[in-house]
Image (cartoon, rainbow, N blue to C red; front, side, top):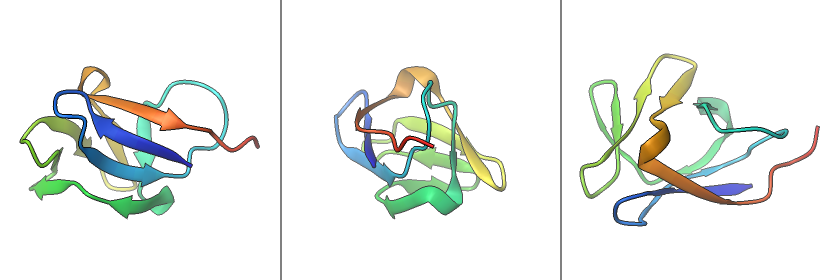
Length: 76
């Protein structure tokens, strides 16, 4: 389980079940445990207004410079 935070204000955006090693390029919607984000159409934003990602149906494509995360990924 990892916590994804906004890089600008450090506010929580998601609690997410990350499986496996590697970078976080997109978040599968089915693995988001808790959602603190704001939605504007297909844009996913932090409460401060920073763009975090774009909703593309089954997943959210993350904007790499706009978030940080901490926690441990589950090994597959």
